[in-house]
Every structure is written in C-alpha cells, then in structure tokens.
Length: 309
Ligand SMILES: NC(=O)c1ccc[n+]([C@@H]2O[C@H](COP(=O)([O-])OP(=O)(O)OC[C@H]3O[C@@H](n4cnc5c(N)ncnc54)[C@H](OP(=O)(O)O)[C@@H]3O)[C@@H](O)[C@H]2O)c1
Figure 1 (cartoon, rainbow, N blue to C red):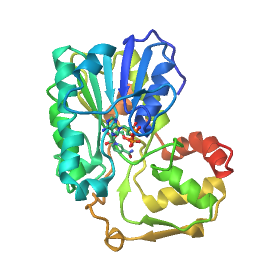
Figure 2 (figure 1 turned 60 degrees about the vertical axis):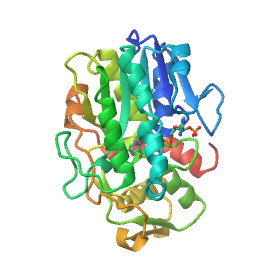
Figure 3 (figure 1 turned 180 degrees about the vertical axis):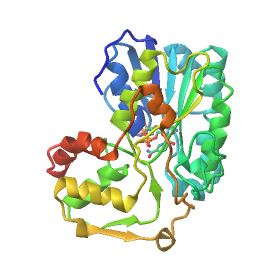
C-alpha cells in the first residue's frame, strides 16, 4: 500500500509501548506523517523513546506530554506467565490500564487499544467482531476486561489482532524466532493445531494510520471494535514452513506437535483467528494475503537469516 503523506489529523501522538512489535510499527509509521510522536519504552531502553512505567498514577506523565491521541500498545503478553501469575496480569493488563482510559475520557483524547483472538475459545474461528467472547486463559480474560475499560472512552477503538509478526528488535515474535532457529539450524518445535490469521505489524500500522488519515476511524459513528490481520487461517507449523520455503531453509528442522503434547500452562484457542472483513472494507481492499505480507517482510527476514541485520 502506498504511504500517503496527508496532513496528520492528530498533531501529537503518544505511543505507549513503542519498543514493542506493534507499538514500534505504529511509532515508525506515525512519525512519517509529520505528526509529533512520543514513544515510550520500559525495561528495554531505546534511543528516541521516553522511559515510562505503567502504574496507578500516569496522570502527571500524560499531562506533561498532553497527547491528542494515545496508542496503547503495552501489555503483559506472555500467555503462559499470565496463567501462573494471575495477580500480576490483572495489575498490568487491567488495573494499570484503567487510569489511562480515565485520563483519555476526562480530556476527550481518543485511544487506540490492541486486543486479541484469545478473547475467544477457539471452537469456531476465524471470528467476526460480533462473535461472543469466551476466553480460556488468564491472558484472554485480562484482555476482555481491558476491552471493557476502553469501551468507556468516548472516542476509542479496540483493534483485535493475532499472531503478530515482523522482523523486530528481538525474537519475541514467532516469525522472527523461526528465522533465527532456521538460520542457526536449531530444531523448531511448533504446535500443529493452533490456527490463527497472522497479522504483519508493518501492514497493520500502515493500514491503521491510513484509516486515521482518512478519518475512517475514531470519528463519531465509526467502528469501536475491528478485527485486523491477513486472510489466511494457518497453523503455526504451516507458517513456519512458509517462512522456511521463502528463505530456502531446511524445513526438516520444524517439528510439529499437538498442543496437548506441549503442556503449555495456559489453554489456547485452537481454531482461533479473526475475520478482517470490516477492516478491509474500510481500507477498500478485497484481500490481505499472508504470502504477500511474508514477501514484503522477506528482505528483512533474509538479512536476519544472513546475520546482516
Ligand atoms: N504480538 C502479538 O502476537 C499480539 C497478538 C494479539 C494482541 N496483541 C496485543 O498487542 C499489544 C502489543 O503487543 P506486542 O506484541 O507488540 O508487545 P511487546 O512486543 O511485548 O511490547 C510491549 C511494549 O510495552 C512495554 N511495556 C511492557 N510492560 C510495561 C509496563 N509495565 N509499563 C510500561 N511499558 C511496558 C514494553 O516496553 P519494554 O520492552 O521496554 O519493557 C514494550 O515496548 C498488546 O496489548 C498485546 O496484548 C499482540
């Protein structure tokens, strides 16, 4: 998709969690609009980002930066750790979000928040926005509770995403990890039966900012919940094999196991994934094929594979 250089609708944007996969992509894309963009990091300090830790009283920090739009891309995202540390996930994903939503509501500042297909039980994916949620895990329950807080902000949008990939700063995302394992000839053990519709962070940010610039989101009457990602419903094993094929890497390193054999602490929605029909119709596109996204990411995958990144 071409990068429009329209006048930014929001002159100052705060991206909380700009050192992460999703926040980093939004931070970079928003910066190209000419808006003033402040991004925060927490435990991984990065040049150009402001240190910020979520907590019960973010008011002075938010007052000081006085953003016109908040993009909230920070959460406790390690699904199995969330399961074993329920108090921590409640604090970080729900309690620490509440004062952000309250500040946005009080100051009439719009908020974009990212949720997940883990709000569903994975019996009937890919899911449309109006499907009834039924989370199986502490992570999924915390994200559903967070959606409830965001719903109280007058101008807010929840974007549900899943299996986000890109070549990021580190290997906390699946495709990045696939590339490094294939490169280092390490066995890659992946679930064979967890299906989702991967989202490519670079596309997500480009599409989200395009919709912002067009005034298609965060306006009176515009959607308050959207599903976004690629069209293809694939297992982790299938995704790993597509990455190996693109790189010409040895796919025999990929070992697929059933979720039952992996003994993960948290239950997973097996047939998850999200239908992005509304997202696509707002964008005016018919299809968002996974292979196109992987091909767009391929030069960076290749550099990582060759240790040139
Ligand atoms: N990645 C996915 O596949 C996926 C799927 C569905 C939904 N989502 C949602 O999308 C959002 C972004 O996910 P992501 O994968 O991009 O996350 P990520 O890569 O783990 O990044 C999270 C960001 O939040 C910051 N952060 C973490 N704890 C913080 C705290 N207590 N205070 C302040 N900042 C903190 C991190 O900073 P430091 O690194 O500096 O600590 C990092 O910049 C999350 O809400 C997640 O639930 C992600």
